[in-house]
Image (cartoon, rainbow, N blue to C red):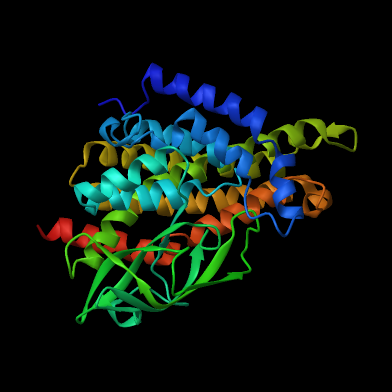
Length: 371
């Protein structure tokens, strides 16, 4: 079985890299970091929408390109490599996937074309503070179509137009669509590990809420959405990890110490070799996840957990070792190393921390072995 991408998908990857190198260099990321009033790069968002990337996996009948999830994985990898300061993940991996998975035909017809056109920014609001996501942790509630409670942290919640909210209704959890520019919604920006990807606390007080999917199926739907998002996030992490390895290698060949490139020293060779091994492990798991996602395979939950764990570890390790390879200068604001380290730490916590995914992986393996 061939798990590699097709020639057409590799061409898309190449063109996406060229586009992002031209339109999202590190200087664009730094502008978002330096300007506290700038939550994301609006011009890049518009340009990405013009490329059709937001609708890559959205069916043509709903205004998308209808390419499929493999093409979306290719795009995600290049966005991760560029540490693009746009709410792509929140909108495409979470909102779009949630609507495609659980939305009614009317909801799909209304929301998906706007996502594909870049007219809507989305977010996923499930957490209500530290700790794992469990039925007991959900206090936000819906009664009579009105939502009350608070969610924190919500990635891109300060700039989103539409949120998918996990809340209780009649004692059981469900998913609901809430327009964040409507009545009964208050936002408060919160500090994040990566200022190029903002987050917020969302407070709801009798905010109008529209059910997404069957009543009482909230946790089941969240798991399915997270499985899909985990694979796509893994490709973002893989792109960032590969860029860190390239940056460390380039610096190791250019930086001289005691008359030799530092890359000729065994300590640096071993460091970069360890990064390469973790990246390749993450790549194989991510490719397996991409296959499972694109074919809607029964192994998707298992493959998504494995990809998420391997990619989180690889990106964090690569970002850390990239700083170490650069030495004292690697810690300075002038170097780009910190952009990747911050993004690596931020992505590790989206849709659940690695510990939660490890527990999920063990559960999947136990369930499979017992069958």
